[in-house]
Length: 370
Image 1 (cartoon, one colour):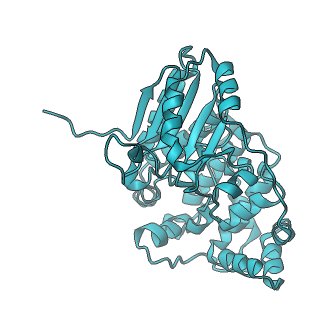
Image 2 (cartoon, helix red, strand yellow):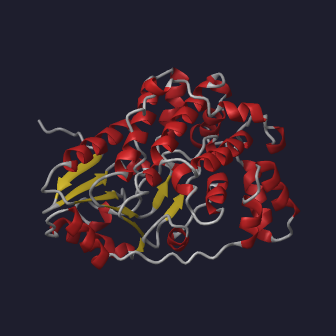
């Protein structure tokens, strides 16, 4: 009898390269707990393996025929499995806590990995997908890349280390991306320091094969090979005057005020977008970024672990903006979230502050070992 089991992560080896393929294309490779565990296990096994000098990561594509290049490149990762978040929260499934703890630990492992990692950030790269790519040796984007941290649309905040990597974008780009959830293409992703190399989508399969076959004696040789073969595109960021004027303001109320008082089309569109996001999470997110800017990666992830616990536990679960936002976007799909409160100006600063309270002592924190 043959088994119909198809692994959600394909773990393979090249000559001196570990090869990881996210293989849940029907869900745009949205991360499950099983995928987080598979990625973690592989990376830990290869961490001290002298025959592995480099790791490459890609997402599979449901549109291609099995065995063809089109099958293996299309959408990298749409983020975490938000329907699972919704159902687990309502049912009291304790695996939800495991998911966030293990996902954030994986994000830390990736960003502190002792060997170069190359990610093929093709197609959709959002939320948890961004957490798999930041802080690595090469972040490759294509003409099909659609990159975002859209969590405020579902009543969440940009987690998976988002506070850390967005706060390090130039100027106040990080605040803009975190609050609006705006989608970026390859050119802006590179300009904002969120990607390194622009590659034609059609060239990805050849590069993957080249990485698999490369003879690399150690991580230093792999890094030198990448510098020669995939040199980073220089960042040529030019400040956007209206963006800097608005998103450099000290509060969300002042940001929206500046935008709505401006007369240019960009400011008006941006203000309209913010009015559709969770008002509470806009305030929480801005505070998150401003705090994370002065934090290490480990401390930022520990803070985010506290915050995501509060998203599901601070209020009764059916009153959570996160549960409600996911319901509106992915469950009922009515796109009419009932935010509480429903206006930016009505958010209580004391409630915002409570999202940064930890339910654990430092010695009991689930990410204390980072």
